[in-house]
Image 1 (tube, rainbow, N blue to C red):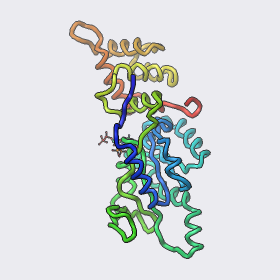
Image 2 (image 1 turned 180 degrees about the horizontal axis):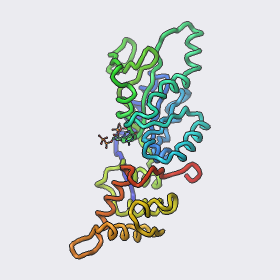
Image 3 (image 1 turned 120 degrees about the horizontal axis):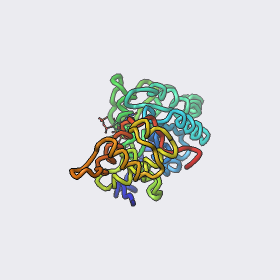
Image 4 (image 1 turned 30 degrees about the vertical axis):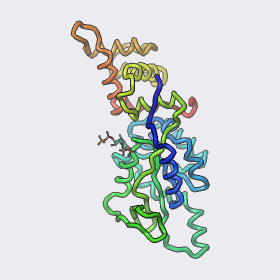
Amino acid sequence: MQYQWYPGHMSKAKRQIQDELKLVDVIVELVDARIPYSSKNPDIEKLAGSKPRVLLLNKSDLADEVRTKEYKQYYEEKGYYVVSVNAKGGAGVKNVSAVIKEACKEKRERDLKRGIIGRPLRAMIVGIPNVGKSTFINSFAGKNCTLTGNKPGVTKGKQWIRLNKELELLDTPGILWPKFEDQKVGLRIAWIGSINEDILDIRELAVTLLEYLYESYPGVIHTKYGIDECSDGNEALERIARKRACLKKGGEPDIDRAAGFIMDDYRAGKIGKITLESVQKV
Ligand code: G4P
């Protein structure tokens, strides 16, 4: 299966982010905690230059806590400040301010030495589509923030959300893309539901997901669907369809419908808190 995501306008978007980055002190990248590596943009290192980087492992409510901790450590060792968050439910969101300040400690000290006092830190949110950027901005900014308009000397049209005296956020997140070339990455992004369904073979998605779960999370499919697990995803899919009496008119299993509800179940967290890659096995 070949994936073709987010066509067009890539270089334009990248240029725009490059321009906007000049206006901020720190870059806050969101990834999906179920696929921290695959949902991470490969260009961000270059784009960020020497600016401090904060990485938010979002949707942590859906991910495997043990693996989330492993990824946190993994990216901290690479120089990121990492926070695990659930932008939708709010968990972890209130820690982000302190981590941003910590990430900008050197810059704040430099400012102080130069006599610059009281200038708020500026942050920009970036990430691939659907990782929860807008949800995070709403949750992070909450109701107690103010929008500040254009400022002299700042690119026209930019809106800043003032969170408090010390922190401002660019109100529109930067949209980046995942690692296009890697088909494994494409498959994982499709598993979490961030690729347009119309271009996907739902049956293949469910078969490959079932095979991954069989290998990495033995027992979860049995617990959820009550079938004897097996290494062949096609066989497992058929067993689940029969077990759920998901049948066509003639009594044949309705494989596509079963594939659809399995993917829905996974994405809604109904199969369990499951992460689809690990630091040990890229
Ligand atoms: P984006 O700006 O990066 O494109 O993402 P957006 O905030 O639109 O979020 C994409 C989807 O992910 C939304 O679901 C949102 O509710 C969900 N989401 C964001 N953060 C979290 C999180 O921490 N945990 C969970 N479980 N979900 C999260 P949706 O189905 O598109 O909308 P809705 O049904 O929530 O209204």
